[in-house]
Length: 388
Ligand SMILES: NC(=O)c1ccc[n+]([C@@H]2O[C@H](COP(=O)([O-])OP(=O)(O)OC[C@H]3O[C@@H](n4cnc5c(N)ncnc54)[C@H](O)[C@@H]3O)[C@@H](O)[C@H]2O)c1
Ligand SMILES: [Zn+2]
Ligand SMILES: [Zn+2]
Image 1: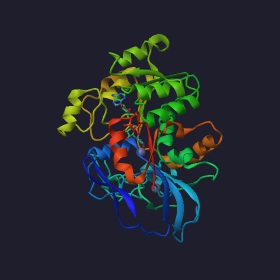
Image 2: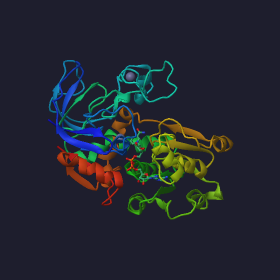
Image 3: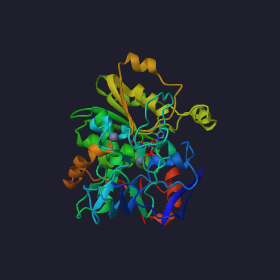
């Protein structure tokens, strides 16, 4: 079959690879009908995630049709159309019972990403996301083996096109978890740093939950304009406004700052030349620019919610400011499984239309071109969907 493989920094290729097979009795084999490129794939593409090996198949946002199922699979059957969460969870362990699927302790035989590991097992395996997360072949491919098929795959109704439901695999639940973690509710004010797919899904969900003021920050005017038009967000370009946090605070009630800040950027944030340079030298694993801006913009007693991925440490993390402002931090990989059913219902009801952010549709064969485009955000690219 054909699959998109990692070969090295900024080198991904669609190649012929062996077909996957069922390995465990609760596996399914999926024929992929649609898959997407995620901002998280860009961290891999840019060579910023360790434990990648040449030939690894990428992709963790995908859906398709069940081609074959192991003898213990009861939740879906051959011919069903399903969306797959990017997190692989057993559904039975301590963390799965708490609804913390991304912390599942039974699926990842890799090392995990925590520095001070001690005897703590790694979090859940993720599709196509390095050997730290289990080295599981991903779904930017014609076929993929899906483990734990009684827990992950969600059957979708036949009248909803792939594009309507594909983002249930990752970015929609990620945006949703971000606003839930941020405590957004009727009348809230929230700032979202990053107007990429995750930031845009967060804006859509903040609107849905009744936020009163949604500020959004990026350096791409085309992404900001989209967030303004579709979600009524108030845009700020951090490259043309001197001090974005100050400018946003100026517009909040009592100039106290926003109730919550969402960091939908993560460890490769732009805007600090020093930190980006130190990151290139591999001295500083994460750039703290977006995180500092979140801390600066939020009001006392507010919440900083972090869906953006971080790695290792950030030197310039203003823990003193966070302490003085009595902030709450919530973060992490998304516990996708728990959010999928309610979000599918909201899509069916027409309350959410995540497909509206798609700008590019390409063949899987042209995926390398898609990565190159999404990486530099050329051609006003917001989100790319690939079809085998
Ligand atoms: N927690 C999870 O489970 C989960 C799931 C999906 C994605 N993610 C992460 O979410 C982040 C965003 O993903 P995406 O798909 O939207 O990626 P993306 O790269 O398309 O979007 C990031 C956006 O942030 C903007 N940006 C850069 N520096 C900034 C700064 N200092 N302030 C404000 N904006 C800035 C960029 O211009 C870009 O538009 C990534 O780190 C990704 O790995 C996490
Ligand atoms: Zn992702
Ligand atoms: Zn588990």
